Structures are given as C-alpha cells and as structure tokens.
Image (cartoon, rainbow, N blue to C red; front, side, top):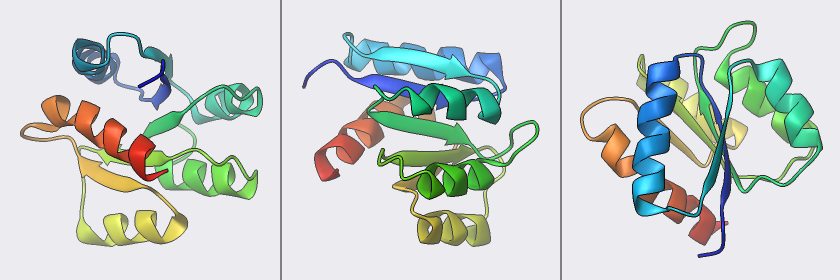
Length: 125
C-alpha cells in the first residue's frame, strides 16, 4: 500500500492520539493530520492530497454529518468515515445515505479496528 494521507477531524485530542497510534502501528508510512474544526478541514481538503477522512460526529460549529454533506457538495471524492462515541441507528442510517463509507462507534475494539476500516475504505474506493 502506498503512503496514505489521512485526515482526522476530532476535537478530543486524546482520541486523535489513540487513533494515530493505532494507525501508525499497522500503517507506519501513513501521514495522519489532525483538524480540530470542520471549517479548517474544508480549507485543507480544497488543497487536495488526502486519501481518507475520518470525522467525528460531534464537532464544534458543525456536526460530522454537516461536514460530510459539505464535502459531497464540493465534489471532494474521498472515503469519509463517520465516528462517534454517541451513536445510534438513526445517525448511522443518515450517515450512510449521505454517502459515508462507514459509521463506527468509538467503543470496545474501535482503536484496534481503525486500521482495518481504513484498508477496507481504500480497497473499496
């Protein structure tokens, strides 16, 4: 797998650190960058160069689903994985209908599973 460029939109720094550690453990050449605010993420995405987006559902100023809608509206064709610590079936269904590649609840083995979820998104792209 070539060097992946992964953008994580997450306002909880500890969750970002855990995801980055899990990703780098299995995908050591991956470049992982953090965006704590959705607006900054959109600016960076306009520059291109990302292979995958992992976006938290609860973000300051804009929900992860609103961010997903904006990414799709701007025709940025990158797999988008919505993650949340507060999931429910209705949000999951809405995320998938909006075009999310996956919807994952941050519980249990989430941090161990995130590298495989990324691999699957890249394979299925």
